[in-house]
Length: 465
Image (cartoon, rainbow, N blue to C red):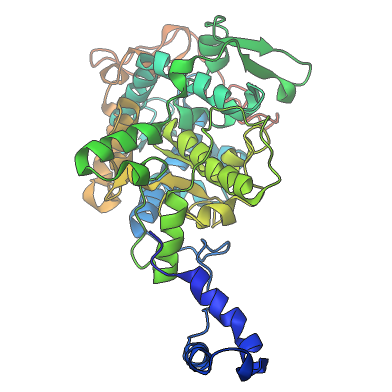
C-alpha cells in the first residue's frame, strides 16, 4: 500500500487559491471555515522525488578495491606470461628485460622492480656456462598456470553454453568475434576459442568470415528455450523458499546489498520499493514489437538493461568484467549510452572499482556473488587464479632472495616436461647432476629489429659448451 495519501493532499493544495478568493455566502459558513483551516495547516509537499536519482556519487567498497589491487599485479604477470612462455626456451636474458618489457606496456626501469617484488612468481638464475643472468617463472607459478589451463579445458562445454547465452542476449543473435576475444579471459575461454569452440560446434554457431578480422562475427543457429532462464530468476526462487516473502514483492525484484556508508533516506526507500515491483521484459525476450513511446515502457526497458548486465556478469567466471568490455555489447543489447552513470544508480546490485591503470580502468562486480572479497560459489578456474594471486601477494621479505639467485643449480627436469629450458641440438643445463656439452657452439644474437613483442632473433638462445 501507498504509505502516503499523495492524491488527497495534492487536491487540497490545488483548492487553496480557489477557496481564498471564493464568496463565503455561496457555501455553508461551517464548511468554509473547516476547509480554510485544513488548507492553512496543510504542509506543502516536499520537492524530493520518490524515484531513483539519475546521478549518484560512487561509494567506495574497500573489499572490492583490495581485490583489484591484487588483480593489477596479476594483469602484469599475464603480460610477462605472454612474453616469457612464447620464447623458444621460456626464459629471457635479464639484460634485455627492460627493452622487451617496454613493448608490452611497462615504463622504463619498471619491469625490473616489478620482477623483484614477486619472488614466488619470477626467479633469476645464472647460466652455468655463459654466466649470464636469465629470468623465468618459478616452478609454483608454472604449476598454477598449467592448472588454470586444465580447468579451462575441463569446463569447455560450460563455455559453449555461456557463448550461446551471450548470443541469445543480442537482439540480432550476432556478436563480433573480436568482442568475444577481448573478453575471453572473463568468459573462461581458451586462447584458441575460435577453433576449439566456435568451429568445433557447428550445430550451435555460424562463423561469418571477413577480410578484416574486426568484422568477423558469429551467429547462433537456433535459440534454445531451456537457456532463457536468467540467473536472477534462480536467485529469486532460492530467496522465496528461504525467506518466504510475498510473491508479488519477489517477482521482479533483485538482491540489493548497498556498500558501507551508502545513505538511504525515506524517499530513496520508497523509490526502491516502487522500482523492485516494476515489471520488465526478460533479457532473452524479443522487444522489437513493443511500443516504447510511453513512460512505463521506458522504465521497463531501463530495468531490463539492469537485468541484461546482471545476466552478462553471471556468465563470467569471476562475476566481474570491465566497463569498457560491457560497452562493446551496448549496441546489440540495447544498453544505455552513459553506462557508468547508469550503473551508479544501482550501487546495491553492481560495484564499479576504479583501481587499475591509474583510474582509467573500471571493473564492474556483481555484488551478490561476493562475500568479504571472495566468490560465494567458486569454480575451478577461479580457484586456480586465486592460487596464483596468493603467490603474487607473498612479500619479498618473506622469501630468501639469496636462495632464488643461486637456483640455477636446480635441474629444469624438476619443473615438468612442458617447461624444460633446453639448449639447442639436444643440449641442456643439467641432467642427473652432469652438465651435457654440445658438439657445436652457437652465437648469442642481440638483435632489436622487429615490431612484435617477441624478438625474432636468437637473442634468447642459450649456449652451452
